[in-house]
Amino acid sequence: MHPDAKKGVGEKRTVGSLYDLIKADSRLFVPGLKPLKYVNYGQWNRARIEVRGAYVKHILNGCTVVEYERGTQQWKALVAYSKYAKWPNFGEAEEGLILLQDHGDEVHFKNIKIKEL
Image 1 (tube, rainbow, N blue to C red):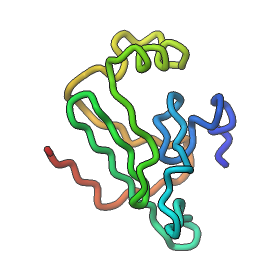
Image 2 (image 1 turned 60 degrees about the vertical axis):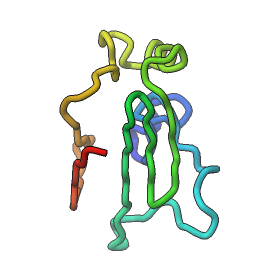
Image 3 (image 1 turned 180 degrees about the horizontal axis):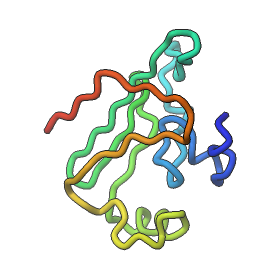
């Protein structure tokens, strides 16, 4: 586990999670599919984020691991108790830029596609 993941509360900074807000739910992994692949073995994880209005779904290697609805009371409570609390209307924009993040380590991305649904 990366050192940054240990700084968050409840493993909400791990792969597939909504960073610092919602932990990826490993109980949702499809039986028989290996949920996490390791680059040092030449494997790649396949991530997909689907946004339909306020509803958002994170899919990791074919398994839905996070689902949420932006703008709800639950959403606002998650933000209020996170590092994003000081950012007005965090996560409420209907459109905008994407961010590919790293923590100073070597990182690789490939086949990034953005498609309007």
